[in-house]
Length: 582
Image (tube, rainbow, N blue to C red):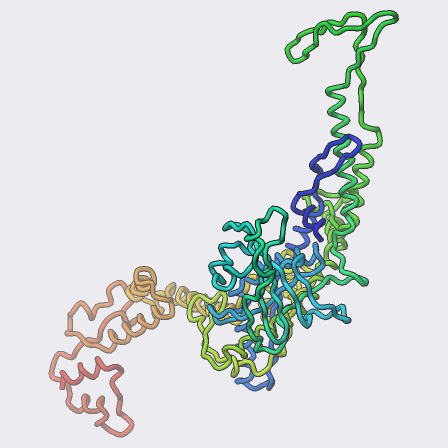
């Protein structure tokens, strides 16, 4: 694992013992290329949790199941799990494991995912190779002396063996996690011969913190790459090939350098004692002078099989690590069509991506169960709230963990295991076009849609708004339609200047038109004229009668006339107008 890390970081030095020198590698690092490309494809899509209702068909039970799903999604969003999955995918491919520990965060009052380095993770042995949750686990990590003193000053100062301390001195911390407790301890500085007696004083290890684990279940999940009997990363087999290729390339460059600056020998003539009178300098054009001998150059050229050997080693690395040329933006010489290139790339990558995502599905399922147990054990009866990712407004929801999480049973599934984000979108479109998938399922599978229910509401609202706008346009185009120029201008003013939603602007325009049509104005007043509208289309007010109104007619409008002839005034303003006339 350390060799893989050094190779990925570019810290490899090629020893050239026969030349008594070392050389840094200067060949293409195919491991990094394959690791980045494959891990990004694995993490380009996120899985989706699904909680089945305990009582199918019951509205309350289904709503509770949807709420559980949203809470888990809020955990993932708050922990930035999409980014952490990218790092875990690299750990999984390079180190064959992707450990994570879920712990209670008392500042945020929620479970927290902490990704651990596989190099510093020591899980308990298990007989089941597919067991993702070890009974206990030890993690190691380093902290500076400044951090140690700031957080645990009274416990370590004067008690821990700290050696020649400075603020950037690193100390190793051990964290033990099982189903009963979490223990953190610190290891003192290692003893060296340069230490003074006072620097050697102190104990070797101090326990810093011990916290009970209220969940009663292990908090560590370690998904491992499927292999025969021992953990093996995807690129373990390329190490020897890479070293050989890098060493051969270094020797080739040395031979080329010697060909540019060849070794020169002074060869004596028969019976003479050779002597160099003046050294030659080709850069300045100075000629060399030799007496009694000849200068001969020894040319050194790389072997004629060198290029072939380098190409063969590169091909073997690509085959061993499943690193196709397409990862570097190139194409194999035997690829003639785009379809053939897709087939080759798919055969190389898709099944590895599928298997990794299948392991992560099970890992996230176990991690969600731990997060739910932490939520119930530490804040089960406390009223909390969360925000739905992607919801613009009104996304805050309140819940009580003990009430909502009636069960932790659920599923975690990738939309299309083995497919990256580009292939997923194309596949969803094809299934929708052929009628094999519903739009609701496509929205749940699309990685760009964080809240399928919200997206459904938005699509419905946009469809209704489009239908309303089409109706307005059709009626406004008809001179005899209900939308006369003044009403249409008022509607446009509400939507453009007042920034009113279209549905609210239509309601306000409707209310204004009703009040105008119910009101009366004296004969000859401007309000009684149609103006730009067609006469009788409702753009003008009613004309008040010239003489005194008939009292019987007014009473009949108030409901006091003959049976069956009663008519209520159309609006409150009409009641006031009728009262004034009485």
